[in-house]
Length: 188
Image 1 (cartoon, rainbow, N blue to C red):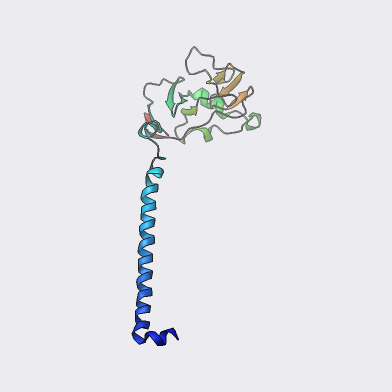
Image 2: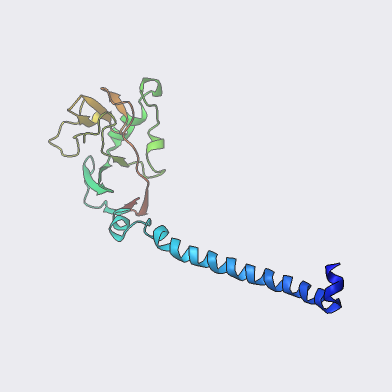
């Protein structure tokens, strides 16, 4: 009955005004969403790592100066990383260890890059209480298995960084790394 009093033209305008109102609602909500996104963006962007953190996310290591049977310590993300150039005898010894005798069984091949088994790269933090084991310098005690030795509680690691005695529950952790060339790696 309301349409009868408004006439035929009013019904047409009412349909057009509904379309216009829907368009204005759409524009208003779009502007509100864009405004909300522009307010939220700085808060989201501040969660990205800063330039100094990004600089520490990777470490390049020159392998050239490391003599066979020796290791160096580099820092990656604030952690010591041991990079050792193993001798053929150390590799053979690590490969000959029966997995059943290991607390945290891993093969030597699973702890090195294929074809690059002379290089062992491990995070140098004892898995018992977070100490830094010795064994990178020729004068340091490498323990009974020729790898690393943590004198704090007697954890001994072999030449593959696997726990062999002491209270440490796990092998030395392996960081992500890749060979850039035959004489350099990138950790991280």
